[in-house]
Length: 429
Ligand code: NIG
Ligand code: FE
Image (cartoon, rainbow, N blue to C red; front, side):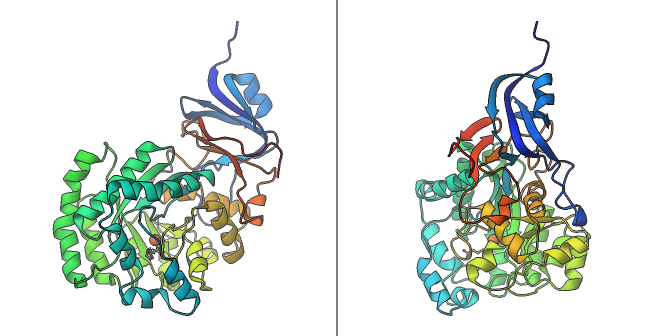
């Protein structure tokens, strides 16, 4: 009689199984992959039951279905902790202006940039928002992202911002990518408004209205994050503080676009207000960086953004790590600075521009990225009890991630135990 416990799926014969186990990785611990050679992962009811060597798990479990990784790398699905997934239209014309010398903030000041996407997005129907954003989400999945954060921020008035949130909730429910929503009404100052006036609207009207709306519409999920673009031409430090303090008093978890173009002190503010993450950090002063690294606020680097803007400044990853910080990577997918759905490309950039090893970049794109959206107990590593979000690569050495760029090395994606992207090729690349 069969006495071994049964599992739904056994993924076996991985050349290298990367578990990324043990929780978020601080400072010098970044890059702890928990690598198991000839590895396997056992899955039941969408959750991971065990990881180990193929022999060990074959001995311990009887599987209703087996999937041979056939000498490939197997690792946790990527978590993308910073995207502006939902918008309408594009800004190809601005890209052309920028490569000919116009700066991002100049374009914003002249009423373009974020505001030009707002003009396209604000009156777009839910159906339009879904049909324009769905293909992006599909590409994210095909490139290995199984959980992502998604921000509003192209509505800049309550009704339109709620429509964007609606779109995020609907796309998340469609699956298979899980979406973690963020309310970013403080993304830009809408035309015809003074910054302080608009912040008063956010604090006195939008955020208080969001709480009961979420209770009705949020499908029992925890409150979304609230984020602010703290920047010259958007919201200064004082106004950013006002938005975040108001959000905090209503129980929202916090994020902040910090020091992307100018060092306004937003990383320091993130630490003070115990934000879950501070993102960008291209211009963060050394003393603020040290404070951030000593805190539990995750430092999210978005190297596709300076790449997309063609500027030579990248987040100071080495200083963050030296001071013991929790470093994560994200795409910043958006129509202005970084139309990039691909976390593998972000890993390649991080290795070259921030001096990360492939192992460090992988951990920053999985378990630490999960910490940047408060989901590290559920996703970001292959450990018993966690969701079975698993990637098979078309290569046998994990360092090929980072080394190669511009092609997709993900061959199979498993989300909550289901194969959602099937094998692209037969052999190894
Ligand atoms: O993270 N900086 C603010 N938000 C985005 C850009 C959004 C846009 O340009 O549409 C960013 O880079
Ligand atoms: Fe952003």
